[in-house]
Length: 276
Ligand code: NDP
Image (cartoon, rainbow, N blue to C red; front, side):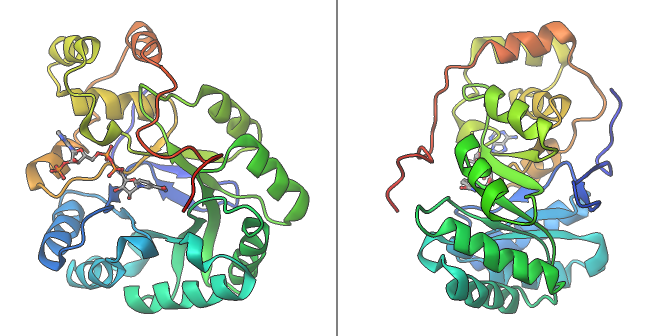
């Protein structure tokens, strides 16, 4: 399976999305955010994943303007936060995000969490914005199978992406199989389990075998599973390391070994019981 950093996946509406992007959750300090985004673009990233709740859209917008890369080459994702869900609120929240980012359109806009009683109306507002041409593709985040089934019934546009917590300790096999059936791409958040995997012995053995870091082994595992990844780092050497994934390949046996690490263990909230 040969791939490069320039490779994209074809979403179900025909749009191409980079397989690897930079996540910027918890990067709230202007200078740190700007230098991370600029370093990422310098090292070949073209996709940036932000959200209204991260409080950094303004700096993401500033960094991409200063990067010197033209807008059409970039793929920018943001998300509507829970407190802003509902039809009118979502339209307003989207306009605020766009303004903070200083952009004319978003490549991808996601419902951040499936807020009960709200997410269908939120989706209808996002469909409206999509039909108006303000967003190139629309999707969801933290949706379980039953949430997706509700959208299939109530909505008119199929989400292109479901961004969920996914790493070797939570491999989301059932959700991945379901999404594949409906041509919805899975995008992993916390692809590195927020830093909690680095001592794992199987992953360290695979890192030694391939002369790569544990982070690179895990990120490569995602890519070979056809999962989109958005690892977060503010350190230039790690930002570079996290896209140096294309000069080796995990064997079927290596893949199985990582698949077997699954414990259905979350580091984040459960989408069926979150309370925010
Ligand atoms: P990640 O799994 O990407 O882990 C990030 C952590 O790993 C940071 O502490 C980082 O530290 C460290 N790290 C990154 N690269 C390396 C490396 N090569 N070697 C060693 N340590 C490394 O977690 P995130 O939660 O940040 O998830 C990624 C992105 O997903 C977020 O930034 C956000 O965009 C999105 N997200 C979406 C959510 C949702 O609900 N939709 C929820 C959570 C995240 P350092 O920065 O110091 O390098």
